Length: 230
Image 1 (cartoon, one colour):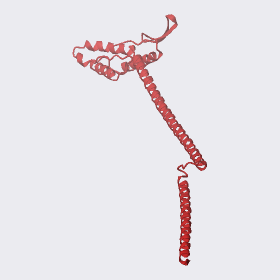
Image 2 (cartoon, one colour):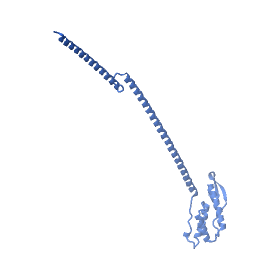
Image 3 (cartoon, one colour):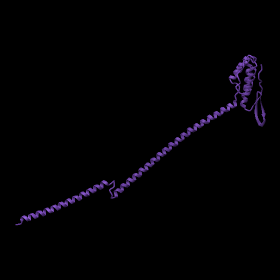
Image 4 (cartoon, rainbow, N blue to C red):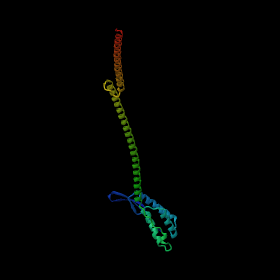
C-alpha cells in the first residue's frame, strides 16, 4: 500500500515580493512552519520504511498512535493522516469508531495566543512591580510628611513656649514697676500694708498712753495741792 506522497522543498517567488517556501506540495509563508513541514516529511518517510503498510491492523495502530502523540502540526502531516483515515474507512472489519478523528490545531494561532499570554503576564508582573514601587514611594512620602509635620509642630511649640517666657518676664518686670497689687507682688504689698497699719496703731497707742500719763500727772498734782492747803 502506498499512501501519501512526499515532494521536495523549493522556494517560489510570490506576487508583491512575498517570499514563500513550498514544502510537500504546500506553500508556506512562515519559515518556522516550513521547517516543521520538512521534519514531518522525514517522519513520514521513516514510518513508511519501518511499518508494514499492507496490514490494515498495523496501519490502524500507527494511525491512532500518531494522533495520540500529536506528531503533526502542518498541512503536510494532516494530509498524510487524512489519507490513512480514508484508507482505514474502506476496510470492512475495522469499525469507524475505532478510527480516531484528526485533531486540527492551529500552531500559528496557538503560538500567537501563547505569546499574547506571555506578554500579558509580563505586563502584569511589570504593573505589580510598579505598584509595589509606588506604594513604597508613597510610604516614604507619608513618613517624610509626618516627620515634617512633627518637626513643624515642635518648632511651633518651641516658639509658643519662648513667647510665653517673654510674656512672663515682661509681666514680672511690669509688676516690679507697678503700684497696683498684682499677683506677683500681692503678698509683698499686703505685708507692707500690715506693717504700716501696725506702726500707725502703735503710734496711736503711744499717743494715748502719753495723754493718759499727762492726765494722770495733772490729777496727782491737783490732789497734792488739795492736801497741802489749810
